[in-house]
Image 1: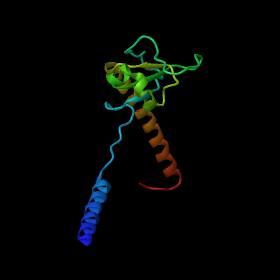
Image 2: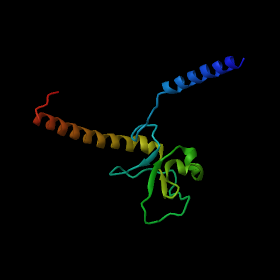
Image 3: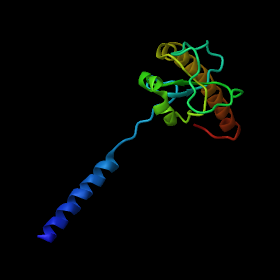
Image 4: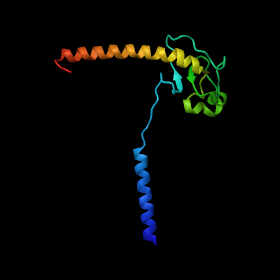
Length: 135
């Protein structure tokens, strides 16, 4: 009976590990619709904010710049319970509205990074041609 129980546990456990190993991770980066986190404004238009004043959970050094975040509405409403997820409990935080993020920031971000990527790829191609490589 013990052997049967042990064999059952062994088989069940090995299937469990295979299922975990087959899981595929998904990552969402800044500039994508499902991204939540810190935003570097750069030269984009001023953000539309959820609250006019910065949220502060812990003591904050006022001379530090404000941090702009995109978070789900329920995280903004109960910021004291969620600030640790964004490593921002000790920061002055302003929450950007989803509409501004999707319509202003995402196009700005893609335009800025697409230009950078094209410039980088052009330089890389020149370097390879100079060294005698062919693609």
